[in-house]
Image (cartoon, rainbow, N blue to C red; front, side, top):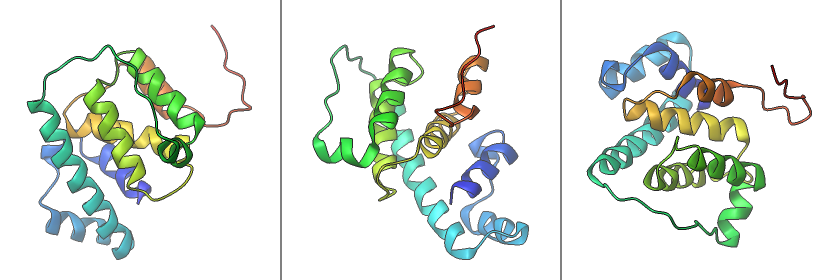
Length: 154
């Protein structure tokens, strides 16, 4: 499913450039993606689009702290929770966007959610809202997931 999401992100520079779901499914099938994965990706993306559309109607700010219940923390994992907190503190995600990312990650029914997949979820959320991360954040979102690799400061 995530291969399809990355393909959509790289192929269609805006979500409104995507064809309708039926035509998109045919195009994805012609490219070589599996029908089951296409179906899962389109359902996941439709749910994301609905939630992201609702986010644009909500305008509130929050200066509170988000506490995770144990089930959320277990499902997301400490790396994902830390990365979400980092994105929010860097003003990449609003509190509403944070909740959308958490909901979409929990919808994967995968525990813990890998950091690479979480980054794709964030990119897809921003993409679905017509927003683009700045160059440094984009680098971090598409950078290495290898925790052992040293980060170079230059």
